[in-house]
Length: 421
Image 1 (cartoon, rainbow, N blue to C red):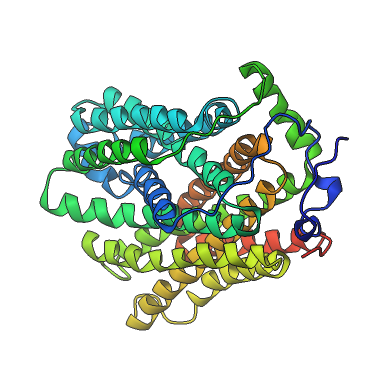
Image 2 (image 1 turned 180 degrees about the vertical axis):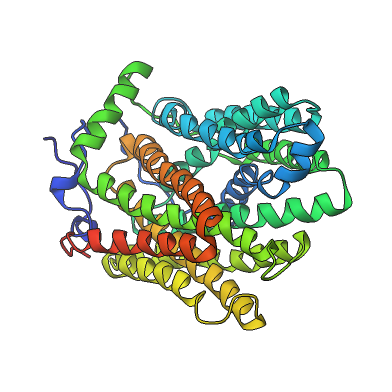
C-alpha cells in the first residue's frame, strides 16, 4: 500500500495503516492560506441555503398531496424521491470534485437544483412535482462539493475548525428549513416556499460566482476510473468504514427523532399546531452550535473522547423524553431539551468524522466525502422509515427505544477502536 505523508500532529489521529491505497501524486501540493471569516461565512450560508431545499417539503406533505391529488400511500414519495436523488448525487456527482474545477462544478450543480426548485413550485400534477423532488435532491449535493472545497482552502492546523464552521451552516439550514416552510405556508400558498427558495439560490449563485477562487484538481483520471477508485477507497480505508458506520447509526437516530417527534407533538397527547411544532424545530436548531466546537476539538486531537461523548448525548436525548408524563408541560420542555441534545451529538459526530477522513489526502477528498455521506444518508433513510413504522405500531415508546439502541450500538462498536487521539 502506498503511504500518505501527513503532519506529525495528525499522524496519531489517523494511523498510517488506515490511509487509502491510492497514489498520492494526483494533486499539486499547494499550501493553503488562512480562510477569511467572510469566506467562511459565505460557504456556511451557501451550505445552509442549499441543504434547506432537502427539507422544505417535509412538513408540507399534507397540503402538497391534497393540492396535487396524491394518495396518502404515495405522499411519502415526496420525501423518498428527494432522498434517492441526493444519494445518487453523492455517489455519482460529488466525486467529480476530484476531477473538475470546483467553482464551476458547484455553480453547475446549483443551477440544476435551482431549476428543480422552480419546477416544484410550478407543478400542479403529481408527476412533474415528483420529478422535481428527485432533481432537488440531485442538485443539493453541491453542499458536499463545497465542504471538501472549504477543507482544501484551510491550512492543515485549522482544517477541523473550517469544516466545523461550514457544517454549522449546513445544520442550521437543515433545522430551520422545516419551521421556515411551515411559517410561510401558514400565510401563503405552499408553492411560494419553492419560489422564495429559488430566488435565494439565484442570488447565492451570483455571489459565489464572484467570490469563490478556482480550484483545479490534477487527478488525471477518467470518470469511469474515478468511480472505480471509490470501491478501492472503501476496501483500503478502515477509518472511512468505521466513521461511516458510526454516523449511519447516529443519523438514523436523528432522522427517526425528527420523523416521529412532530407526530407525537401533533397528536392527542400534546395537540400542538403546525406553527407550534415549527417553534419546537427552531429550538432544536440550537444544537448546530456543536459544529465549530467539534471542529476545534478535532484540531486539538480530542476526537476519541468527543466521539464517544456525542454518542452518549444522543442516547441520553431519547432517555430524558421518558422522565415526565407524556402531554405535560414538563414533558414538552424535556422533549425540547432532547432535540437540542440530540442535534448537538449528531452534529459533533458528523464534523469529527469529516475531519478524520479529510486528513487522509487532498487528492481523493471529494470521493471520501461522497462515500461517507452516502453511507450515513442511507442510515438516515432507514431510521426515518423504521421510526415511522414503529410509531404507528407502538407510539413514541417503541420509536424511542430504537432511537436509543442506535447510538448505543455505535458506542459499543467504538469500543473496538484503538485510542489514538
